[in-house]
Length: 236
Image (cartoon, rainbow, N blue to C red):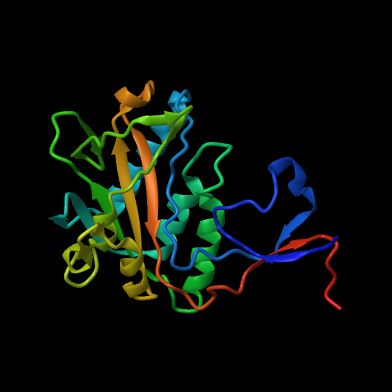
C-alpha cells in the first residue's frame, strides 16, 4: 500500500533494507537537537580528519568568549556551518545525525531568512587531558561506551542555552535544565553548533580525540510540513 507519512529526522519508518521504496519530499529539523552518539571508533584516519575539520572551522571563526564550561564563537555564517556539516564524516550506520542532509536544510532555511546567524560552542572542561583545536588547548570530554561504538548522550543540556539571552540559568528547574524550552525560545535566525572533543581512552579509540557534534535548532517556518513518501504515491 502506498503511504505518505510525516517525516521525523531521527526515526526510520521501516528498516534500512526495506526503505528502497521510500522517497523524501524533504525533512525538517525544526526545534530539534540532533547529535552524534555513534562513532567509527576504529577508523583513525577518519577521526583525525574530523578533528582537523574542527580546527579549520575555529581558525576561521575563533572563539571570543569563555562561559558555561566552554568557549564561544559568535556570528558564524550559515555557509561555514553547512560546509562543516557536509564534510564531517560520521558513522555509516548513523540515523540520528546526517550532516549532509542537515546542511542542505540549513541553506534552504537561510534563503528564507532563518538560520542565517550561528554560534559555535566548544566544550572545555577543566581537565589535564587536553587536545589542540584551532591552535588552542581544550579539555577532553569524558563519555563512556554504552554499546559497540555508541555512547549514551553527548551533550550537557545547559550548553544549549550558551548563546541565549540570560544564558542557561534562565532555563533551570528542579529537575535540571530545560533544553526544549531553550530551543523554543531560540530566535529563528539563530542556530547553535556544539563541539565536543571526546577523550579517546574510555572509547578505546586510536586517536588523540573523537569529535562529537550536536545542534540546537529553533522552531522554523517549515515545522510539521515535511513528509516521507512511498514511491507508489502519485500527486493527482
